[in-house]
Length: 560
Ligand SMILES: Cc1cc2nc3c(=O)[nH]c(=O)nc-3n(C[C@H](O)[C@H](O)[C@H](O)COP(=O)(O)OP(=O)(O)OC[C@H]3O[C@@H](n4cnc5c(N)ncnc54)[C@H](O)[C@@H]3O)c2cc1C
Ligand code: SF4
Image 1 (cartoon, rainbow, N blue to C red):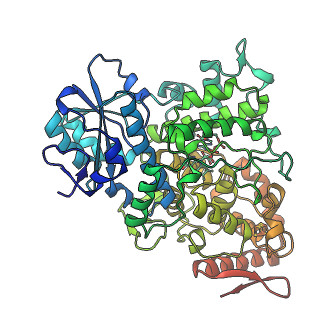
Image 2 (image 1 turned 90 degrees about the vertical axis):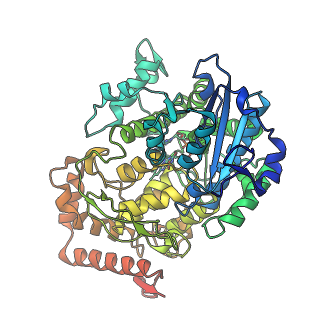
Image 3 (image 1 turned 30 degrees about the vertical axis):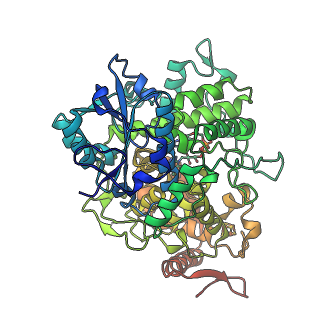
């Protein structure tokens, strides 16, 4: 047994990590003085979890750092850093409020650590976990009575609201759920009617950003001894993982959280109108960048929604933001109701897990949702190779730098291009899961399988989100920095037509696809043949890890 911890209790021994900055800040709690030990998982870093227990018993918090978890996927180094540093800061902050904190560090699974811990302290208490992977891992302990699960207090909506508005069977549609949540909570409602006369102002929120209004620089956060220690740990243990690590760019402490919240409120007035815009001048534009902190529960979702509702930002921005927070609830319910889509009767196929990053590929024996039976691997352009497509390369560069982009690069560039290349949806999902600092199975899977790709068919969305160059040109400044001309040489629109033609049998009877299907049939045989040739050339070039370049003649050629 190789676990290392900050406390010397039977079976788990103090190790080298026990001499660092964290060990110096944490005191050793008296195990016997606590009547209930409560395990807060890595994404439950808030004392509101404890308050929700409403017990008079003395409570202590146990936090576990498992390098086994870090090794399961090629997690971006920034993602490992942001999670570990937040958990370590939370430990110190909890202790400062007088709560006894036990911090266990090891290379065992969470379940193995908890089994040993419960042998010393008896039944450990915990809250239903958001991530399926963690639920499955600790399920035997729950069955054996070693772990007692309580209701997770972080969600804003009960499952009954989802089932009453959407039902427990597909197709699942957000509109009905959103209306239900607004009615039940009274958010942005007057006399039972939506403020402004309609529930959604989305149609007004589609402006391109041309540099005005100016966008503030994203905040730079404090960098203390805990951040430094985590950076050293990640660099030592996870050097073979992708991505750039710099914890000054993400909140980790309470002071940072205050700064992050204040930035979100500062940009909120323009959040709505420019929600869908993309720019290389400002990667995040007016997006809050709060998702990571909300998903870790460093900020409770309710706290964020209440701050936004109390702001004096224009209604279309406030409504847009609240709708996004409700979308977060909606995807969680879908994950929960379908056991991560395992109960859905949809076409599936096996997949190499590991997102195409060196050394991580393996089949898991499961068959994953794949409505369109797309089976290509993820091109290396999603990790480190250049594709030559500026929109893709700029978005991947942002992901490698920050582990984050806002939702439109995720949807209309990164997912869109993978769709157009027939990448296996599971492989793309694994990439998002590993590469984004806010990704956890319950949120990344519905977003990528259900919305970013058409892997679930119409179970979540009425049609696939695919587009050619006109959308990217309209909503971003990427095309101006691209070697391709968005109308003359860019392959995207041909890829779009080729995709629609290839998968047309799957769209028969889908009235939302009717116009697109009619438009394909208007294309001449020659155009259709060129679409197919472009698809094959782009696919083969990118799957070979080579870069695309336009030739002197103005058409596409692949260059090694
Ligand atoms: C293909 C794809 C994959 C995605 N993967 C993730 C993921 O792994 N984790 C994740 O948290 N979000 C994911 N999203 C949703 C969204 O892109 C991010 O929540 C958002 O970009 C985070 O940036 P932000 O904090 O500035 O959010 P903002 O744009 O400022 O939105 C405000 C808040 O709303 C919530 N939110 C908005 N959209 C969603 C959504 N679709 N699902 C859940 N919450 C949402 C977030 O908590 C966010 O902080 C994904 C979207 C797409 C299209
Ligand atoms: S021209 Fe085409 S490839 Fe280049 S950025 Fe625009 S859409 Fe992307």
